[in-house]
Amino acid sequence: MHQLTLAEIARGLADKKFSSEELTKTLLARIAQLDPQLNSFITLTEDLALEQAKAADARRANGESGALLGAPIAHKDLFCTLGVRTSCASKMLDNFKAPYDATVVAKLAAAGAVSLGKTNMDEFAMGSANESSYYGAVKNPWNLDHVPGGSSGGSAAAVAARLLPAATGTDTGGSIRQPAALTNLTGLKPTYGRVSRWGMIAYASSLDQAGPLARTAEDCAILLQGMAGFDPQDSTSIDEPVPDFSANLNGSLNGLRIGVPKKFFSEGLDTRIAELIHNSIKELEKLGAVIKPISLPNMQHAIPAYYVIAPAEASSNLSRFDGVRFGHRCENPKDLTDLYKRSRAEGFGPEVQRRILVGAYALSAGYYDAYYLQAQKIRRLIKNDFMAAFNEVDIILGPTTPNPAWKIGAKNSDPVSAYLEDVYTITANLAGLPGLSMPAGFVDGLPVGVQLLAPYFQEGRLLNVAHQYQLNTDWHTRSPAGF
Image 1: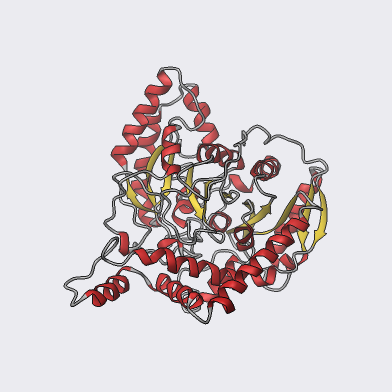
Image 2: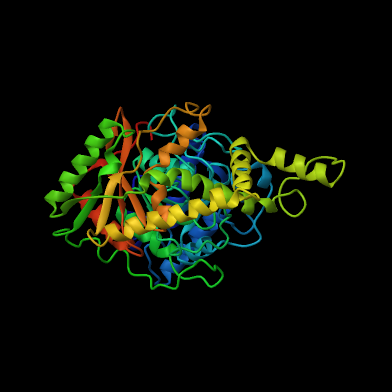
């Protein structure tokens, strides 16, 4: 049963081939057996999962149906979950049990999804490798010596290893799409505002967006359907109708205009990945798509702009964790200043401290105009580039990452080299656009992803293209040896 996709699980439950309780017990046993190799979970919620599974079976017995009713999933450990530890993979929140459910958690629970637990992540979602977690690095199931990507690496590793069919993640600069690419999954970052951020512990509020990680575009459509929708509790949520994301998966790609930016294939991209991306382009051409070269002139400014804006917002958001109101408190402080200093120094790891310092500097008097304000102006230029491009094409295609997964620890002495792994993904966050990564092949036995970007609220178009591609390729069906 662990090989079943969300769509196959929905059909199996509807046909009474197995119950949600049977499936949940099977997957919990598999997690207990295999996750010690991966470290993909921080908290397992066995009792809650079995309770939800029994409730889902009862609802089906009473005539209810639904693609998520009885389907097992897991949540990245920054979604507040009532009565369950929500740690953000940080010592700062190691003992925090949320007093309420995040909107995403509540919506999926209402749809009947069964939550198996909370997955590991980079601390406060800051990282590209899932190495900054207080609970230790997550391993890539394709090669246990390599990273799974971050910050949603726990969700990605768990799904890739067939511990469960799908999981939630969040994407601030590529943190759904990049781990999806490095673990052979399909991962979708929706339009900013499409999915509620309420109850999602913030890293950078103007960039963070929740989305699904699964093996197929079809499964991402199912999970996104349960997550999306306007939320009056979230001031960044957009009151936009939620379409049926599964309805147009089988639409024809004939005449679809795909833009390919020249700068996506410049220096820095592994030539073997470039070849796989070009193979993906040829496959889409066979399906009727029309390829058109386009230009994104301000793309080279995205990394410096992002690494001013995101740390600045993180510095502000994480100021609440001071040992007084929230978070870890040091032992026996001498005075209030000592309480603040030691609580934050002990509670936050090196990567989080680094980004807080960068952000505080960028926002400080005398530097705000020179750094933060300039970065916001560049952000607008990047958005304008995309708007101009989408006047000519329907979607934009390119690599998700410049390299395959690297070895654990390989970039620890050079944080900037890890930041550069997000070069193709962060522009979508700066502009607020939807983006999807789908499997495109392998380099040295490690997965590679191809990225698709679309205009605002066109997630359905991305899912349609990815689904048609997956009907004609088999990269997404391959699983790591031993799992």
